[in-house]
Length: 81
Image (tube, rainbow, N blue to C red; front, side, top):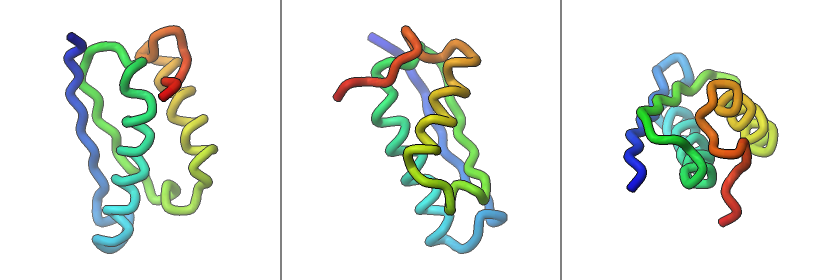
């Protein structure tokens, strides 16, 4: 069984509670899509202000590229479900 720990954070620099929650929801959506292909470990996603304005497809590409660079994705591919 894969053991993964995950954390999401968005500081007040992001904006009000609505913006912070939106940023964390976007990160959770990404994690849900890619979680099956992540290696075991602890992951902490920190939202930056730009996450509020970026298109979700661009966000997916940027995050998957970052995970590939650190070797956190199996086969470097996203999940198919």
